[in-house]
Image (spheres, rainbow, N blue to C red):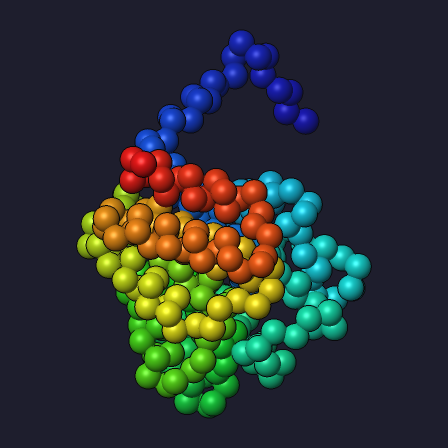
Length: 262
């Protein structure tokens, strides 16, 4: 047994350097987006993101797959098929979703997705799993390729995939090493707005809050002046939808106003 060192001899770990406002805003946006996942397990989520998600209050936990009385801190919508049936998620595509989540590179992910398409084993949830994995790993080019493939094949997406895509955009504007890539930030708003127009508005409270949070997160990282106008438009729309907004949405909107100095 190796004895522990006296406190005075232990190596001191420096306190983390404070994040600059821009990077902090980006990190908070990813967490606050409350994205609807393709039912990821904790090991599928990057460490920093997982810690932020797990710190959410119990009111944000949702019933997970398996036992109906179990709640998951990771998912933002019920994922137990006995409790909820969401469109675009077939039982026969679970293998494809799992393989995409386990991809070790963007090339491998695209190859697996194309193979699934060739075998006619793709639905909205498979596209969502691919987009989500791209977001987790900051695979910007692969994320756009997945989106293009989805449009070419005419695969209909729903609120779950809409939220996933917009949240993946926010996370992917940063490179693997380094800060925000200006070229990515410049087009993130239009990509998000295109997705917003394409998908039918959410029909339940969980989907509503997740999609609104993801869209506001995009507005909070885009430097395009039109982002503020879209955020104000989204907020006016949200107040007339009949769904109760959770406390995160108010913080999301305030972050947009702060970022654009309003």
